[in-house]
Length: 374
Picture (cartoon, rainbow, N blue to C red):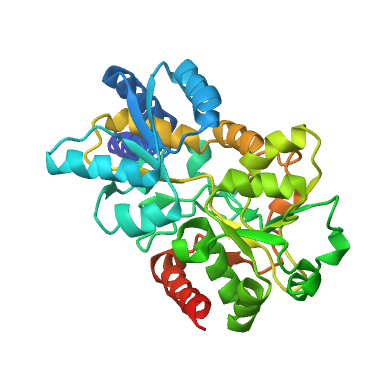
């Protein structure tokens, strides 16, 4: 009897041990970040909040594709505030001074994020808000992890990594073989034939000049901007028109969206991404993802933040914008090969955090000094 009782006690203790550990394991799997159960609870809570408010640049992809798809999938309307970054930041600042918080998500460029949102503590950590299994799965990302470029690696997510345009040419006036290296840009043949945004006035023209300064040096910048007698303009569409007509058949700062209509009309442009002595430049365009603090619809914001970096959403954006994503599972067959970074190449990263905070401004100042010198 004693032996039988002892065996029963032993078996009961073993059963209890496994029961407890099985229960703990199931609970842990259910509640860990990225679990399906947590995702479902978040979506249910988001629907009760009724909406999510997102701010970003005027963006037809967002308006025409992303918002309808998101709302159809989750039943959550999106209020999209479109505008220039400076306008949105000013509005947010005014609201916050009055203790008003209207916006959940801000999709902005590196300059806005690194120099305004982050240092002014306008952000909540985004990393713990990302819970969708396909988003937190490190195998789904080219870097083997989600890329948070901010100093604390938790506030700002970078989902895109593409090679940016260097300049455009009119192929009816410029043969591709004539512009292989930076030295070719200094050929007297092109003197007075190149248009650009004025680098002294700031903006894209100043940023392009800063990159040229860092990658090619002071002497190149001086010869290129001064001796080649670049024609400077503040009007993007004017430069696009000059390029189309061959008036100035090389355009340093023309934009794709200005040229698409002209290409459809039959004009023959070539977009150049790199030179033999100047590897391409990386861009984080079209946006970096941030979660504003004091978000009024926090659960809806979490749902949007997760879905917008899912395979489905990023592939929609990539197809429409032509930018390469950092996901490993998105289709890239439709992208131009020149825009997809090659692992073996060391590129200049125009969205590097330190470059955005201090490096670019320092380089721009040096360029300004060069151009203003007699």
